[in-house]
Amino acid sequence: MKLERLAVTTETMRAGMTLRQFFEEAVRSNVPGLPFVDETNRIIGRVSVRDVFKHIAIPPSVVALAGAVGDRTDRLDLSEKKILRALASPVDKFVLDEVPAVSPYSSLVKALAIMEAYNTHYIFLIDQGDYVGVVTRMVIAERMLEVLHAIEHGHVHLPEEGTVG
Image 1: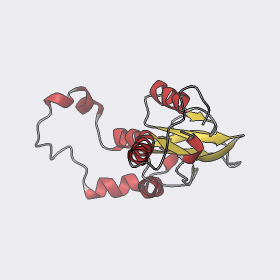
Image 2: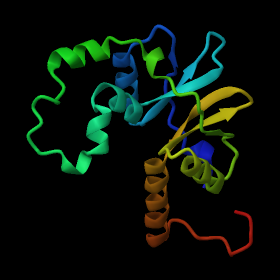
Image 3: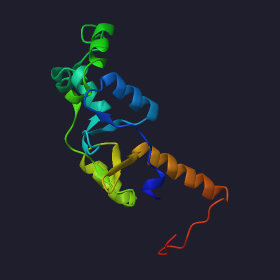
């Protein structure tokens, strides 16, 4: 399974953009994170949906006691005003320094291992410094099922073990 065929093409985030722009692109692309680039388009970080929610919606004390929090948390919920304020925030405030990345020609095993090491569900594909796209665990799972269905319907034949195919 070739990573380059699994890449989801996305826009990049940069200084001056807002959380609203981040969420719009992440939702449009159905990815949990986007690269953050400098003025030369070099990736210098990433913005993660999970991390943004952690900062704008979940007080640290609630995380520590998550199992004990009751179902009625009206005082803790995000109000429309708080959401609007948060979405107007600069995306720069939410940039993570670690950038899980591989070449589009890397193996699937390497990509999954790096995702595991970074405790993330996605990895950026970078080819000679240029951003190619993002691969998510869900895209990999979806492609595995497509291959399985093609094999079951006789549209694809597996190569013999140990041969290149």
